Image 1 (cartoon, one colour):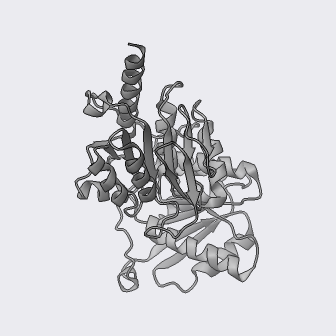
Image 2 (spheres, rainbow, N blue to C red):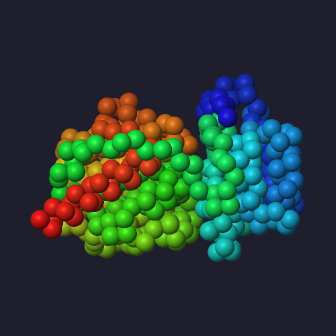
Length: 371
């Protein structure tokens, strides 16, 4: 699906109206979302569906630019509807989930793995402050995500990410180093790519992995739990003062920066956002550059904006190796492109190729330790 992204300039946005289909079995949520979007010159609600089956029929009939999709619905839930829509006519989908039910969390991330782009939280009630917070997030998400390029996904019950197919990996100079840490940044479209990479690594993968994933703080524990089901390597949300250990994956909290010191102590702080981001990948990458010099790898995956590029400049100056996800497999190519445009990327790779590189590094370091 090729669509023109929406400009942040309201005058330019008016030149294209974003057609939105709302899917929720709750009349209250439908009414609230319509009220949130009512009167906007660049967004039009073209239909409402109350279950997954109706959502599929209306999507194929109305051809909306974007769908907001509930998870818990009668007849057919949102997860199955997403899988079928993405296998027939890919449309940008925002999952609307409740924080009340733990099962919603896991299903929401399964929906992202199946092709949905992001998750937003349902308003908890009619409180004006909560209404405005959800409204701002909903409008921003619709305007940003309605124009992303999507690929057709053959319908599978498991909903795994479509394979692109790895190229032949070569032995690179970083394989010959003693890599102390791998730092990864991702945003929109990132969770399923993280799951794909982590699930592809050997069970005894020993190099610590530090991750900044832009996400709602309320959903971060669920995302970490979900990632834990995709890999046998332990995954934890970082808490202040943790010591970075081998064979472990550490994820930044949803509302705090993550940094690491040379003595392998992890720190979190709630200082000001960096270019609007907290956690900031740049803060992580800068600390990794300072702590481990050239003995580190920085990876940037799919995402909007340019978070991480400034920090990778520090890592590149220190001699660290930089990988970015390729455009073909990225839901949003903003963050990888920002790194490429600054000539900081050593390699541009698909997720499968990233797994190949890291696995080769793992095997080489293990053989070096045994010799």
